[in-house]
Amino acid sequence: MNWDANMRIAHLTDLHFQTPPTLREMFHPKRWIGSTNLYILGRHRKFSLSTQRGAITAASAQKPDLFLMTGDITAQALHAECSLAQKELQPLIANIPSFLIYGNHDIYTSNLPNKSLKQLLGQWLPPKNPYLFRHESIAVLYIETCRIDWLSRGWVDPQALNKAKQLLEQSDARFTILCIHYPVVNRRGQPYGPAQRAIRNGSIFEEWLKKAPIDMILHGHEHHGYQVNIQTGKGMIPNINPGSSGYARDEKMDRRAHFTMYTITEDKLQKVERFAETAEGFVPTTWGR
Ligand SMILES: [Fe+2]
Ligand SMILES: [Fe+2]
Image 1 (cartoon, protein in one colour):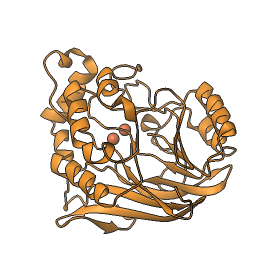
Image 2 (image 1 turned 180 degrees about the vertical axis):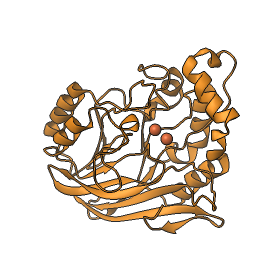
Image 3 (image 1 turned 90 degrees about the vertical axis):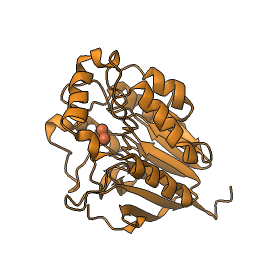
Image 4 (image 1 turned 45 degrees about the horizontal axis):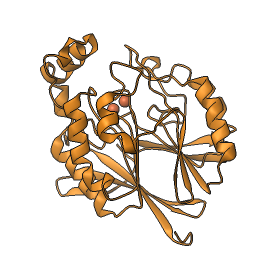
């Protein structure tokens, strides 16, 4: 790669591919609750296959050099959901260097890597925590923030932070992106909350970040996107959540799916573009909801 050229990165998050569970899959108590929420209380209508497809098609049309996805690939980590995700993501993962991380919905009933996700999307997922994915002169650091929790709280392993520090010390990347699922800060740049949705030990993560040579943080989990600045060892850097890329469009609720494109030249983030779904498809937008 000629580093005078621009590197363009597509970022999708929280696609939440969903299928109803089989009877056998329903035996797990968390899936009883999850499936009730999704299929009896109607939460499944919040996400739409045509929107998920539209986001993937529109991101592919941008001809990115790299595709990143920051978790919640599925709704309940069911085999059929993983299979659907693998099929639908083909336009991106089959053609573009890609790196996907887990969300709390992908680590649904066990802290062990989900077997179906590993089997179907394993080549694009991190093999361990932490992990430094490399593409040309760009490094993408993954640190797991998800752990089984009835309240959907996140957690970061202090040992993973120590190992991540070592990975960064050994890296000669010119631009380093941190990909996490849970947010560290909210849309006002304050610690993310409420407590039942936040990283439980988020304060140690914030302290760690203040010394880490990270140039940009990408995350998901919160389905309404935002961009704020956050302090790292590289100064105040952008912390970006495009918002869910699978959200069914609801004009009354002012709810729509988004994805983002980043242009990086050498060691600088030159441009952030955000796209939103409208009746005409995905079009450039701003940072309102
Ligand atoms: Fe999500
Ligand atoms: Fe999530």
